[in-house]
Length: 474
Ligand SMILES: *Cc1c(COP(=O)(O)O)cnc(C)c1O
Image 1 (cartoon, helix red, strand yellow):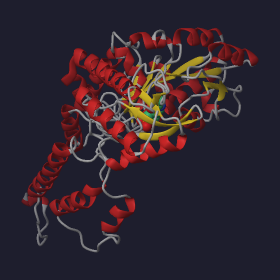
Image 2: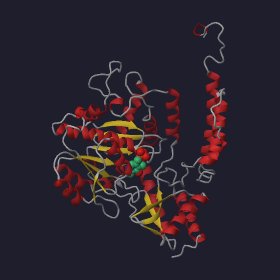
Image 3: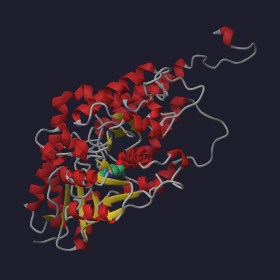
Image 4: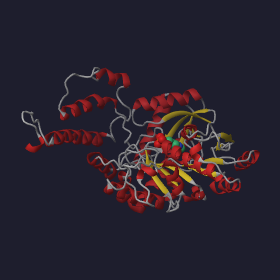
């Protein structure tokens, strides 16, 4: 130790051993306290952002503090403002919980702090991610040679894929992507009008502009004849975005038919399957995604259905060479091996945490049968919720519940809005209020591995209590 210190310097704790240990001990204690309580505490936070801000020190203090007391302060001030997203009765947005193996692996990812951009300096995490990628392609039924990039979520996954699509379509039409879009042919970007907002954003970020929208049916499935007509109306390169899992209805596009139409027009097909892609893993539900593996690129999340901690999305491109051509980085100081792509060649960033490692851990802990059980379990819970809601006078389920999404409504929009507010305030469950097909809905998205028959029963109970309290009648 001495050779690393200069004379006269005060050495507080040269290895910082004690400080890491105390800080991590505090974090461990608070983490277990949270996890032990998450299933039974009110799902909603006790206070709002202003309430949390009122407790937080506002000015940056002149003097710092030791690590353990910083962790204590963080835990104490945050506790009342935490949402129990890990609760089996949390149905908001589309958010998964966390499996123990994935959470623990995520802790190691932080402790190891491996910047997993390049294979050579970080061989362990790069290798674990390569296995995770192969396992993902396997359970999702996608082409085994596809390129896989671990990104922050499905939005950045769609962005990554659309950038690759843009460049590939320019190249296919004799243009040089390096010249940008200014000198290339006009690109067309098409999607159904139930397209998720993240795909619209991704298209804009990729320079494609807002999509030309094609009609969709009540459940949100793209009108395939309309797609054929829209493609026939113009010529030149086209990119078509399809959807596995509508965020309200859970519906799936007719991939076999839509991809055939897109192929005939020479278009690139991208699939947003943030949660819906996982239907592929289940023999019972696989029919929903028939033909989907014929697309060119896919975006999905691991932090939703697979229940790994935030943030973890996955960009998948059939033609790995096209992926690395668009997203690859090159510099004299970046070690690279010919013919093997590095992690940073498949994502739009150079530095990042090894977020594929928790994916490996979740899949390793589940095994193939466990993944099937997970996906079937989420869908069963959604079916159970829909059946339970339909049995309560005055309540209806608006969507065809084919996967994990349930849109609950009453006869009047104001009653529906009031029911949503009542539920979130009461605390047994948390579900999102939204508008769908012109009507107010309370949307239940089943994404947590812990949402079992008991959770479903208690959820239906709470909804029935809310309807009774509010005088909602049939
Ligand atoms: C959640 C979601 C997205 C966006 O995913 P993020 O991980 O939040 O970026 C995209 N599409 C659908 C259908 C989603 O449900």
